[in-house]
Image (tube, rainbow, N blue to C red; front, side, top):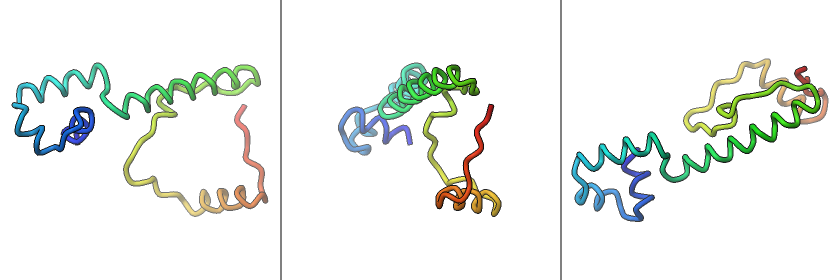
Amino acid sequence: MFWFRLALAFGVPVRVLQRQMDSREFAEWMAYSRIEPIGDKRGDYQAALIASTTHNAVASAFGGKSVNMNEFVLTFGPPRKQTPEEMRARILFAIGKKKRKRKK
Protein backbone atom coordinates (compact mmCIF):
# COMPACT_ATOMS: atom_id res chain seq x y z
CA MET A 1 0.00 0.00 0.00
CA PHE A 2 2.91 2.34 0.61
CA TRP A 3 3.76 2.34 -3.11
CA PHE A 4 0.33 3.78 -3.83
CA ARG A 5 0.59 6.49 -1.18
CA LEU A 6 4.03 7.46 -2.46
CA ALA A 7 2.83 7.47 -6.09
CA LEU A 8 -0.02 9.81 -5.13
CA ALA A 9 2.44 12.13 -3.38
CA PHE A 10 4.73 12.20 -6.44
CA GLY A 11 1.87 12.37 -8.93
CA VAL A 12 3.05 9.42 -11.01
CA PRO A 13 1.73 5.90 -11.62
CA VAL A 14 3.02 3.17 -9.31
CA ARG A 15 4.73 1.30 -12.14
CA VAL A 16 6.68 4.43 -13.15
CA LEU A 17 7.74 5.05 -9.57
CA GLN A 18 8.83 1.43 -9.13
CA ARG A 19 11.00 1.65 -12.26
CA GLN A 20 12.63 4.89 -11.18
CA MET A 21 13.17 4.20 -7.47
CA ASP A 22 15.60 1.61 -6.11
CA SER A 23 14.96 -0.37 -2.93
CA ARG A 24 17.27 1.80 -0.82
CA GLU A 25 15.42 5.01 -1.68
CA PHE A 26 12.09 3.25 -1.14
CA ALA A 27 13.23 2.15 2.34
CA GLU A 28 14.31 5.73 3.09
CA TRP A 29 10.87 7.04 2.10
CA MET A 30 9.23 4.44 4.33
CA ALA A 31 11.39 5.51 7.26
CA TYR A 32 10.64 9.17 6.55
CA SER A 33 6.90 8.52 6.48
CA ARG A 34 7.06 7.05 9.99
CA ILE A 35 8.45 10.39 11.19
CA GLU A 36 6.40 12.66 8.89
CA PRO A 37 3.26 10.96 7.53
CA ILE A 38 2.79 11.45 3.79
CA GLY A 39 -0.50 12.43 2.17
CA ASP A 40 -3.98 11.97 3.60
CA LYS A 41 -2.77 10.15 6.69
CA ARG A 42 -1.21 13.36 7.98
CA GLY A 43 -4.49 15.20 7.43
CA ASP A 44 -6.34 12.47 9.34
CA TYR A 45 -4.03 12.99 12.33
CA GLN A 46 -4.50 16.76 12.15
CA ALA A 47 -8.29 16.41 12.03
CA ALA A 48 -8.20 13.93 14.94
CA LEU A 49 -6.16 16.38 17.01
CA ILE A 50 -8.64 19.19 16.36
CA ALA A 51 -11.63 16.94 17.10
CA SER A 52 -10.15 15.61 20.35
CA THR A 53 -9.14 19.09 21.51
CA THR A 54 -12.65 20.40 20.82
CA HIS A 55 -14.25 17.39 22.52
CA ASN A 56 -12.03 17.67 25.57
CA ALA A 57 -12.71 21.41 25.94
CA VAL A 58 -16.47 20.80 25.89
CA ALA A 59 -16.18 17.72 28.09
CA SER A 60 -14.22 19.60 30.74
CA ALA A 61 -16.80 22.40 30.77
CA PHE A 62 -19.67 19.96 31.30
CA GLY A 63 -17.97 17.36 33.47
CA GLY A 64 -17.51 14.84 30.67
CA LYS A 65 -14.72 12.39 30.03
CA SER A 66 -11.59 13.40 28.14
CA VAL A 67 -10.50 11.21 25.26
CA ASN A 68 -7.23 10.56 23.50
CA MET A 69 -6.65 11.84 19.97
CA ASN A 70 -6.47 8.22 18.75
CA GLU A 71 -10.21 7.87 19.41
CA PHE A 72 -10.78 10.21 16.45
CA VAL A 73 -8.25 8.84 13.95
CA LEU A 74 -9.98 7.30 10.96
CA THR A 75 -9.47 3.59 10.50
CA PHE A 76 -10.23 1.64 7.38
CA GLY A 77 -11.04 -1.99 6.88
CA PRO A 78 -13.96 -4.26 7.55
CA PRO A 79 -16.36 -2.85 10.14
CA ARG A 80 -16.70 -4.50 13.52
CA LYS A 81 -19.67 -6.84 13.77
CA GLN A 82 -22.43 -5.49 15.97
CA THR A 83 -24.34 -7.63 18.42
CA PRO A 84 -28.13 -7.84 17.96
CA GLU A 85 -28.51 -5.70 21.11
CA GLU A 86 -26.27 -2.98 19.63
CA MET A 87 -28.23 -3.03 16.38
CA ARG A 88 -31.54 -2.71 18.22
CA ALA A 89 -30.26 0.16 20.36
CA ARG A 90 -29.00 2.05 17.31
CA ILE A 91 -32.30 1.59 15.47
CA LEU A 92 -34.32 2.76 18.48
CA PHE A 93 -32.05 5.78 18.87
CA ALA A 94 -32.31 6.62 15.16
CA ILE A 95 -36.10 6.61 15.21
CA GLY A 96 -36.23 8.60 18.43
CA LYS A 97 -37.61 5.90 20.68
CA LYS A 98 -34.74 5.92 23.11
CA LYS A 99 -32.36 8.59 24.34
CA ARG A 100 -28.64 8.01 24.12
CA LYS A 101 -27.06 7.58 27.54
CA ARG A 102 -24.52 10.21 28.45
CA LYS A 103 -21.37 9.20 30.27
CA LYS A 104 -20.44 11.23 33.33
